[in-house]
Image (cartoon, rainbow, N blue to C red; front, top):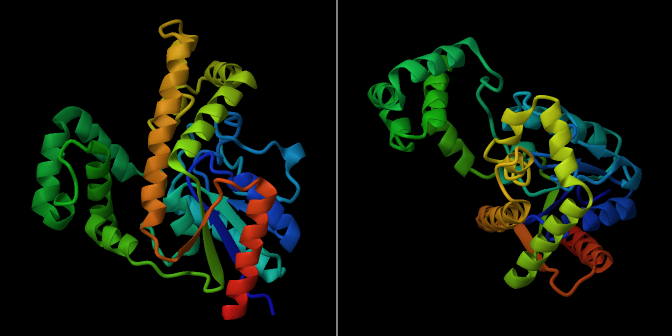
Length: 313
């Protein structure tokens, strides 16, 4: 009997998750389930470090699900990821879940329940219209009156979260209740092993910078221009679209490319630090320092861990 149904290979951007995960999936006869919030978007390929289809040694799930700008959320990802994982478990195929979006990892693997508001609802449209007319302060005052526990968790100027909290109230739940739910860690799939990859901080930043340079060299500016030509400017300027939002003003002739490249590197380094902070808070993750390891050696280290901890279990 197989010890694990799911092997999670996690860590910050540019640490080498994809190359190691491909090798682990091949060795186990498994398939990849992506846990990357940006790789779900079709056409956003170079800037998200998406493995091209021709280079994927095993089937990939949860990539290229929607067009940029289409509403998508952790709740929708949970549905899509679990559909893929359930089918893999039913066919006795190991799922290698890999990615750096911590909330997506937890949505797929933990017992987390999301409220129903995962797409634009009439209630949210009503609240956003009020936000435009009345301002964030008025909506926050209403939230503080109706749900003080949730208001205490939010900054008055975080209009998006305030709107979401009021929408959740209309759905019969509470932002504060959801936040408490997020703090509880318990596997939805008991036969899960989480492995974290880490490298020396200076080496991680070197890899980040090299990756950004490679993205530019392989056509990231042209990819952004093509997406802008499709009318997707609002999707590309979203705060999480690192590597895209910095290049939009370059293409418009309002910024210098070299400055934008440095901005991308700086933003990616900050994102890597946030990813490490998120994953370090999860005591279930077993860490491997891969600073001196090749992708093949990293995969071997993960496979050794799978075998040894599987025997322990």
